[in-house]
Image (cartoon, rainbow, N blue to C red; front, side):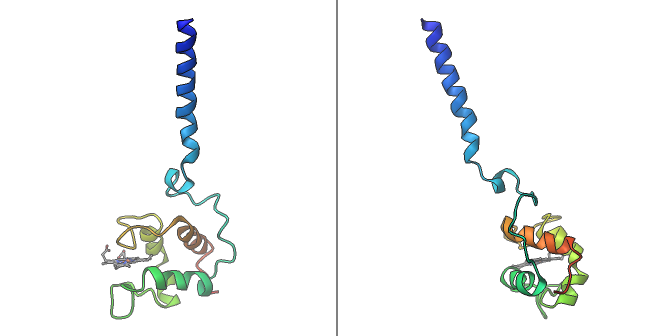
Length: 120
Ligand code: HEC
């Protein structure tokens, strides 16, 4: 009888500890995962990337500011490998300096760079 109760209690504890995982978010579990996010359709430089850089980067990265200037397409294109390293991979340190953008933005930026960073 006592054994049965102990067995029952330990199964309950095990079940509770396993089910705790269901509340974790994808972003917490896979901070650098760029698959499974469908919010990347119709990513264009003019409608998606330029406004994203304006909101997150151009305070610092502009003409007369910190290099590279990320306000014009030609300069963003020329620096796309470094933009990917800093703003997506966070290497050698993340950009923006305060921490990477959210996963949705990083997905869009990664999608655009992977497509060859077109001027669209
Ligand atoms: C608060 C200011 C600030 C913001 C906002 C910011 N950066 Fe930077 N960034 C810097 C500074 C300062 C440096 C130079 C020091 C360094 O390399 O860490 C730099 C360097 C860089 C470099 C150059 C790395 C190299 O190889 O020389 C790139 C690329 C870059 N940032 C991209 C971005 C992108 C993309 C964003 C937006 C997603 C962004 N930064 C937002 C301040 C900022």
